[in-house]
Image (tube, rainbow, N blue to C red; front, top):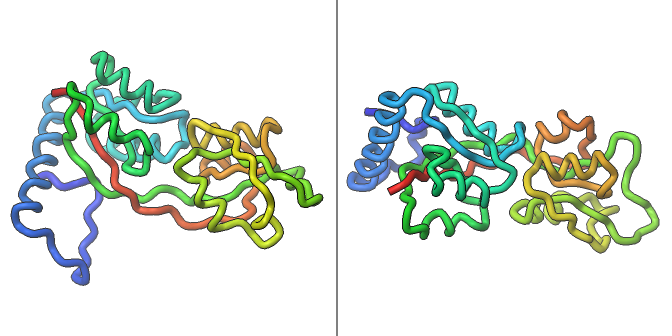
Length: 216
């Protein structure tokens, strides 16, 4: 039987009920068999390189001979799949617009699995910190990860008014900060490393559910 990307044995976790386990296995058998029969299947997800979506897509691509195509937004990923420019789309369950994939009449959910993200946290520019005057903070972040700022902000930042600078990805948030467009950013470890930032506060990655969509 084909297995999901990562299976962790833990006797403390009860096994899925039989019908659920069978349905889960059937989905993965079908997906993996399809990849084996069509080498170079194109998997679209959110870029640029270094996003959690990109890292998860690479995880699959290296094991199953897939080709990864990155888009600037999930709207663009959806359009590429609907227009048949890619074969499948990889979308995290945390994405606020996921229902557009679920309810699209031309798409179907092919499989799902759990996979951890890299570290996430609050980053600052290496040569400057946020203004200490106590005024408003500009924070670059995806809508989906704004909560991380609330959870991790140290005491000196926790009570400051925040002006959110919308970002399309964790890497875009890091890019905005590096270019001087924000005081802080909520990003991941590749964003910090790739843009020469420094951590203000960070937390381990979270295990989230990833979804694979194809066309009907």
